[in-house]
Each structure stands twice: as C-alpha cells, then as structure tokens.
Length: 194
Length: 160
Image (cartoon, rainbow over all chains, first blue to last red; front, side, top):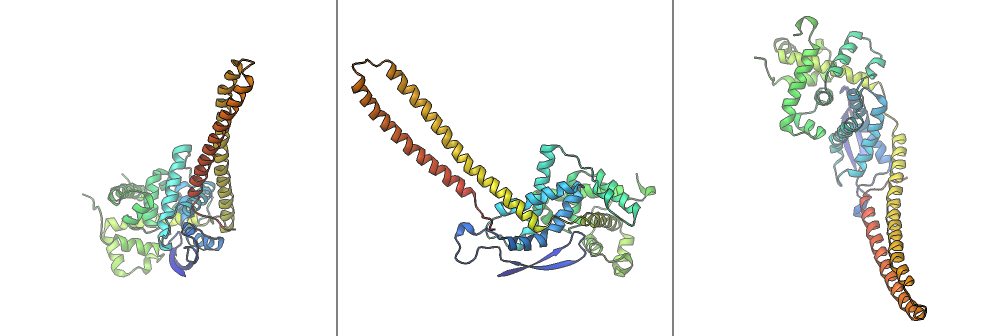
C-alpha cells in the first residue's frame, strides 16, 4: 500500500509527487507495533518533507547548526509521538508544529539569539534584495517570522498555520495581520516609509 | 483607513509563489495588483519571503541516513536510561531494606541475654526470613510494575 504525497519545495516553485510506502505496520503485526517505521519508510518520509522544514528552520533562526539539531529532534519526536494511524498526508503540518515548538523551547531555555547569519553567507545576485531580506527578518520577532513564513512561503491557510503553530485559528488572523503590517512597512521603498 | 484584506490576495500569493515573472502574470491580476494597495504589499512581502526561502534552501538538510543513525543512537540511549532507571530504583529499595533490617536486628542482638541466645536467634531468624521473603516478593512486584510501565512507554521500535 502506498500513499501519494504532493510536497512543494521551500520556495514553493515546484510540486513533487512522492509515493510513500504505507507507514502502518505490516499485516500480522501486533497493535503496539503500528507506529513502527523502518529505515526505508523513514527515508521516503524524510526526502518528501525535510527540505521545506529545514528551510523554515534556517529562515527563522538563520543558523544552520540549530536548524540541523532541531530538524533531527523533530523527526525523533515525530516517530515517537505520532498518533497511530495518522495518514501520511497529515505529517507535514504535524512536523512543522513539532519543529516550531522545539524552536520555542530552545529559545526559552537557552536564551539563544537569532543572528540570522545565514543570509550573509548565501550567494545572491541581487545584493539589495538580500539586504532587504536580512533587515526585515532581523526586525521581526520570531513568532512574526514563523507566521509570515508559513503564510507566504509555504502558502498555508489560517487553519493550517494554526495547526502548525499550536495557536487557535481565531488568534492567527490578528497576529498575522500585525506581522504583515510590520513587514510591509519595512519593505516599503525608502520614500514611502513613515 | 487602510484596507485590512483583499479577496484576491490568495491568488496573488499563489501566483508569486509559483515563480511566474511579473510580466507573465494574467493581465487581469496584474491590473488588480496595480490598483490594490493591499495586493501590492502582499506581492512585495511574498517576493521577499520567497527570496529568503531560496537563500535558506541553498543549505541542504542533513542526509536521511545520518539523521536515522542519530535517531537510533538517541533511541538506544533512552532505552539504556530507562533500563538503568529501573535498576537504580531497585538498588535504592535494596539499600533501604538493608538499613531498616540492620536498624531492627542489631538493637535486639545487643539487648539479648547469653542464655536466651539460642532460642531468640532461631525466633529472630525465622522472623527475619519471613520479612526477607515478604520484602523480596514486594521488590519483585514493584520491579515488574516498573518494567511494565517503562516498557509501555516505548511505543515504537526502530528497525535496523
């Protein structure tokens, strides 16, 4: 049994169809093994979902080592806490939620800063645009970055953002509106800024 | 008062995310973006975040097999910690038992008359055996409960 998943890459430019072998236990297995996953199944899931989550983590933190750590921990948590019988298509928002929670825990307990160094190291043809991105990301709070990333990079709806962030759909709307307003002001051309 | 939303904003986001160049956008959408301040901002924000995503995507995630190996190692550490937890609990119980038994047995030996030694010792030893057996049964029961509880928390297996 296989499930076909469609995942956009982190920039949302192309959709990739990935056939993931069923994650459920093989026939005859005991009930308590229903969430077991072998390396091949994990590899399929990882290939289909890791890239946008990794880009999200880098975009929010700007630090590759933190993004790598959190990504690994995200998959560990996902495998150990994934509800039994979860359809493969629902894995994506669930993974984003785990990653978001882990990131918040990390910031809360370790008081890490978010220097967003990655944007300095990246090669870009348009230096002004790169500087704009860096300036905007540095000026936004982590939660604002999360909301805007999920809305404008991943193209999630308010309900999906609520699932991915653990907020209620009702509170996503005003928070996203405020974050958007802040980003819009920061991105206005020089003469139009207040 | 500034516009709070626009019903065409999702189409603007979708079009910008798809990577269509501004020149190739449908004329109707292009006209709307030019006329709507909210959608102009939406387009600008989406473009900037897409640019940030492109930069972030230049760094590939760690390979799957590496993450899998790390997960297995972490899983083994957790299993070892759980197993050790049980042994630690049993060691504490054993130490506690030894202390209580010593505290109870030694004063009685101290106050014992030499003539009563043989009878008292046999009585004490039978009492001690009884307490010992009872404690051993209790320890086995507690240990089994502990193992069953910790085992139930291991709700998935990682196959090699």
